Image 1 (cartoon, rainbow, N blue to C red):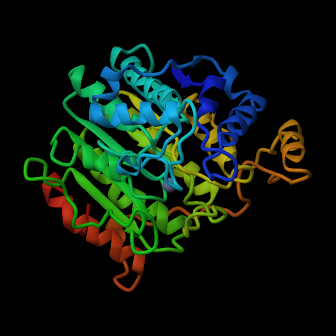
Image 2 (cartoon, rainbow, N blue to C red):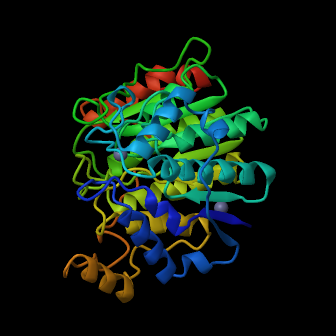
Length: 393
Ligand SMILES: [Zn+2]
Ligand SMILES: [Zn+2]
């Protein structure tokens, strides 16, 4: 079993500057914690770096005029608002093109390795740039590595790819890219657009005329917490993904659904996010012969949440899962104290509350529960296209 982990310090170059929420410290801390817990030394784990993707590869996800605009803004530092560059969310920085293009290579080469059988699982924590659009940057995302990786799989001959996005924000860029492509299922479980950027991702958005039912949106209300969030993941995302019978599973694990995240309003613990990863991993083995590409994404509780969640992701993909009761290693805690002038880390790899497993949907739902209503809306919108029963499957 081989698990390919995309990592090199060069990926820390994706840096919008001081004060921006998407600091590369998130990645650095994740790999420090994973290393301290021995995850990166597990049998079968291979670390691989990534050179910047060529214009040809970037053109599989983006308009060449946009790629040229990024290259210009990257070299000159001049804003280009018509392409979403130089905004508060996506400020220009020197080397922006190369840094963003490196992330694309990480995910595209991971897709190659899965398709050729060189790797069974692959993880690119720096990836998951799900808001980047064909012609513009958005929401901290310059190039959409998820789109480029899925295109690579299709170009290599894959007929069915499922993309499951668990970030608190709607996976709008990936959805838009495959809106009318029946070979790609995109499922996003996110905080409702009524309260969160980018404001899209409604259950009635189900894909284009050639691909009805291959776009799935579960827009949970602000405040949704563990058991009900997992119920949404189970009763919609994983149920549809299983029925779609993909050859490869691509998942996005932005960890900004956590209660401590400063940018969102969900309340999903490290433990529940870890439980979702275990379900996704099991699904990959059940239906995709194991072929699983796991990506990072958002996550802005930099010291308290992100390193733990993504270390769990790396550990699950490496087949050395870490118990939530495992103490956070002292070496890691000391490093966090050093960089935060005394800030403390959580004591353990979980949040300390026992996780209740959700009931199966077939055992009944509560029409007065606002999450159950959202789940039912998503199921009613798409289940018929997958020969599933919205009430009982
Ligand atoms: Zn997000
Ligand atoms: Zn596995």
